[in-house]
Length: 373
Image (cartoon, rainbow, N blue to C red; front, side, top):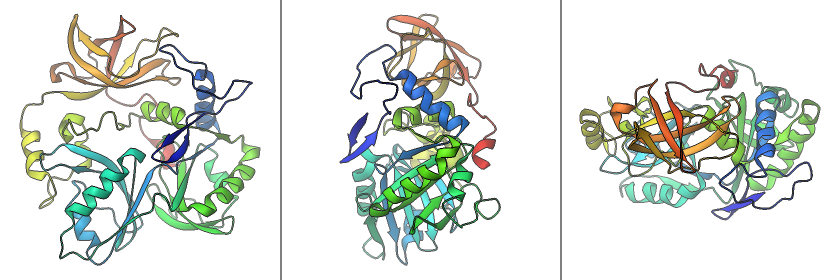
């Protein structure tokens, strides 16, 4: 089943086993639940491929590109041929958006982020560029497409489609290089939002279909499967990756608990003064990761009340069922005094409190060994 995201069709899930391909609306486990779980299993056990062309794709280049981007972001700028995760902030230190920054070359930086942040990203880059800076901002979102290939067999599948070296150290985790697939030159990014061995492949939209066909043909013997955004959401929750529901312009970096992506030793970045104040001040709330008892019937959708001894102490922002944990997983903003890992809380789902435990690490591959291959 597909949805339209900023002008793109994006797969939510793939109908199999005679299931009708249409929307199913329910507060309980919907008809597509098993199909999505099968997609997750395929990625975790074999390999999965997803069309991620809907993601925003913007290139910043020119003589002043590095200095320009470096003063915007709170994280260290990745070196050429490397990838970094960072945020763009308001002057008040609140999160405008999360973005991956890929250093294609010394003076070429490539931003990719959620589709619905495309215009915000363009605006932030455009209006924060000074008149004396020689920088080109090129929105590639319509011109380029992208695929994500993930799973234990991903290297075998990609290796059958390219002559490029894919083993470490030639192509290490968070590395970048151009490779040839199906007669076309594509950018390969060694990263995985699914938390598996994987690559993202970005390039002109007119060659993406041929690359998909080549990967699918090579992956057939490995049990490759298509997967959509619902499976992707489940897997990012299992990996404790925060998403757009957590990283909003209502919160600061310390409140979102993403300070590991911040370098306060930088001389300056947009929003630094406010971020330093936020770090020093008592937190109003804090984002926590929860495992919630599952009844096998009802699901959460975000916005559920979080209780401690019957008193509301916060609310969920994202909820998804996890086959790895056999529980519902959630992110929630709660009073800091109840954010310590091991704390027991209740989350109200369909009017009934469910026991929830604050977790300190992901329920899947906490050491992050699988993506590193």
